[in-house]
Length: 401
Image (cartoon, rainbow, N blue to C red):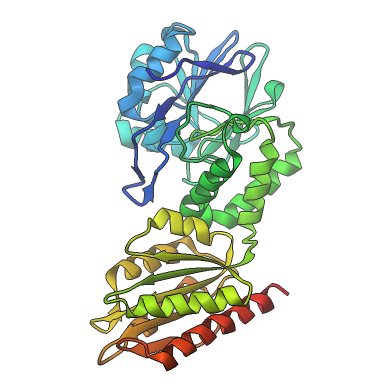
């Protein structure tokens, strides 16, 4: 066991696990360069409650932490905020020790847990607004479907002003510290941004409505304890306000240039396009999609107003890594963004047209014609690339007015 239980509020304990070594998530769609955590919380009152569990391979660490506080057989309730196995994987092992415990969750949660584990647990379906009394504390439930699964739910303890929203407001971030005021803020926000961009971005309209619903409830709040990463206690509204901005697709006058090159011609084009953008006063982030991590690129794109994509032509199409990247981006459904494309080719083109086709399907506005170069760019081509960058910079400036 790497860390002891930690009391985060009076009678409320973090009993989760830090996974220092995990490097991929969601079937290798998300890279976790800083690891992750699986957070679970134990509340000890007249009734004892475990809120969420951990990934199955770490069940013994969770149990050891619980035993350091109470006998697991005395647990009365287990709250399942979300079915996904990184949160529920330890539940079968826990239920063998907690035979009197009742599992609480949404109707979709009940269905999902059964289809994952095929166990006939004592299950109570709860809905938004319902509460349970533990003694001095109460817990209330807020259904949050599609944040980010249909079964998702938040649990709130009004006496402690504590929100436990499972996957909302989390980050994949392993640390020896548990709270936002004990880690580097820039690292924390970078991981929170990547988490939103890669997992929650397509759900922005749902997220915005749910945040607005919670704001209308006017609940008191001084701590957010998500199921991945760091607990927000210094300023829990910092992450809430960030989610609102991201969900509203607010952007900055910045450009992300993403390209894939075969023999270096497209990269040469990219460098001059970038020079044109920079000389026009635009902040630029640049990624060779075949070299850089996709999770990092998507994280950088979340707040950028403009995207420029480049690819060499191969078999009358874009190169394969770029094709996979754009297909993933299309699923994220970015709104209020502008873009253009460029690339080199040999005897025939095709990459630019195929990139534009996918970008149109993604709903991203193509604001200037594509730029092509046959074989290696000459001085005239280089000049055109620089002008292409400056022209796109003008589009960014105009979009911000």
